Length: 208
Image (cartoon, rainbow, N blue to C red; front, side):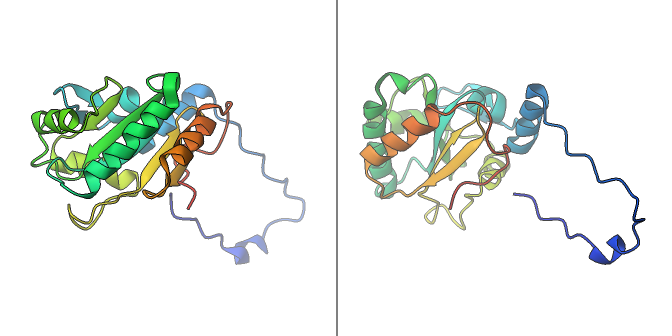
């Protein structure tokens, strides 16, 4: 997601003819790759619907295949519909859900979305599962996380309805349209979960 660096081509004209070619970048070790991902996504502390403090990368994303959504508990139209679709996806994933797949719903209205409000929303929409996290917290911290994911909307009502699906072990992230059939989302998440090691950098943006 970083801005591209502009090379000053004119400077290359002054390089000595015999100058050695630059060495190829050394592949990152697993520890370096993880540190890079943690730095990018941050370990911002948020709260689950149970009021538990969690670090966003280390406790929520690390070693998981995640489907991230953005909602608010007082929503009465789009959010319940999105939640029902995710319920169908969860059922379609079978044993994959919970390990390695986890759902992460992030509040776009953290001022009103207390852990208790999220807990009641999950119960009301039959979305209660230990691996379906509804996250909230201080407004600035929640917005910082949503901004990192590239989904910070102009207002609560105009929040993103896109699903983000990512395999944090392969560092492969994609976007899923909210009107995609649940069956198609299931197959997409299954493919992510079946990927091997390697992949794009942690900060690589979703396929658009």
